[in-house]
Image (cartoon, rainbow, N blue to C red):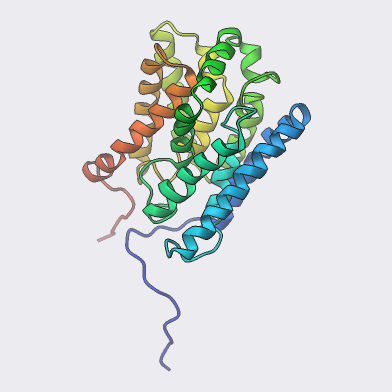
Length: 289
C-alpha cells in the first residue's frame, strides 16, 4: 500500500520540542500572569490601557502583513506575546500614537518583514522600546529620576510607584521565570549565566548590584529576551551571548540609565548572533556510527 504524503519537509536542523510553537507562546504569556496581577492591583486602568492598545495594534499590523503576503496567517500567537510583553516595558502614561508607532516597528518591520518568528535579527520588543527613546525623549528623564531613588534591595523586589510595569514586582517576574524553567521552555543555564555575570561585573565596577539585578526589566531580559529566537541557536552560543549582553549592560550603565543599557545591550548582541551561529560548533545533531 502506497502511503500518501501528508507533510511538507522543512529545512534542517531538526530537533524535538516538548511544546508546539503556539503552545510555547501561550505558556510564555501565562508566565507573565503574576506580574499582570500585581500591576492590576496598583495600576488597574493604566495597565489595561497599555495592554489594549499594544495588543490591538499588534493584531492590526499582523492582519496588514497577511493582506500584503508577508505571512500565511491572519493573526500570529507570537504577536500576542510580543505586544503583551511590550506593554510591561513602556512607561505608564505613554500616549496612544507612540504605542502604535512602536508596535508597528516591532510587529510589522522587525518581525513580519523578516519572515516572522525565528527569522528576525533584532528582538522586536526591545527594538520597539528603543524607538520610544526617540519618540519620547522625556521618558528617559523619568527613568533617570526613578533610578536615583530606587536602588535598595526592597525597592528592587517591590516598588508599586515605579515608571514601568515590569519594575512593580521583580518577585512576580522571578516566579514567571521559574515557571518557564520548570516547563522546560528555557534552559536554566542561560538566565543563570546572565544574572551571575551581571552581579559579578557590577560588583567589580563598583555599581549597585541590588539596584541593577533586582529589577523586573532585568529579569524579563534574563528569562524572556536572551533566550528567544533572536539569540544563537545552540546552548553554548546562548550562554556566550548572555554573558556578552551582561558585559555591555554593565559598561553602558555608567553613562546611561539601566533601561537604556538593557535595551541597547540586547540589540547589540542580536547583531553578533549570526557570527556566533556561524563560527561556533553546532551541537544539535549527534550521529552514532
